[in-house]
Structure formats: structure tokens, C-alpha cells
Length: 102
Image (cartoon, rainbow, N blue to C red):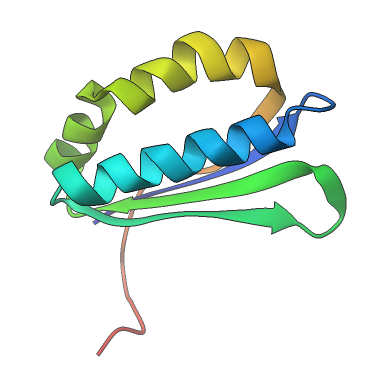
């Protein structure tokens, strides 16, 4: 399993646009990417202009499929330059060593 965790700092006034985009990205992932295990996004309780994005895939090939679809391309070409001040990769392509799942 491959996991990515990103802390996203939003530009002022762009929160709703990013949440709407991530909701669409999530929908596409679960409808057309069988290797997507998790695609979750969370508020940052300490910063109203920040979010956490958590993604998990069965393997590197599944993550590559995600990266080939339109939402990933739009994220890089439109969302990042227009809506995001910065982001910090907390986990990048982390491989699961253990899980609490039964």
C-alpha cells in the first residue's frame, strides 16, 4: 500500500473551490480507480485556510493510474497555481508496515 499525506495552505477565499475540487477528485477516484483505498481531506483545526489531504493506494501502479486521470492533471495545472499558497508533503509514497484493519 502507498500512502500520501499533504498539508495544504490555501490562498484567501479559495477554500470552497478547493473543497469542491477535492470532492470531484474523490468521486472520480472511487468510481474509476479500483486501486484507490482512501481519498480523504480534513480541516486543519488550527488554520481555517488549510487542509490535510490523505490518499492511499493498493500499490505504485494504482497511484500511477490516479496520476493519469483528469483531476490529478487539473490539480497541478489549475488548482495549485490559482488556489494554493504552499503545501507540505508529510508522507510521500509511504509504504504501509502495519495496520489496525482486521
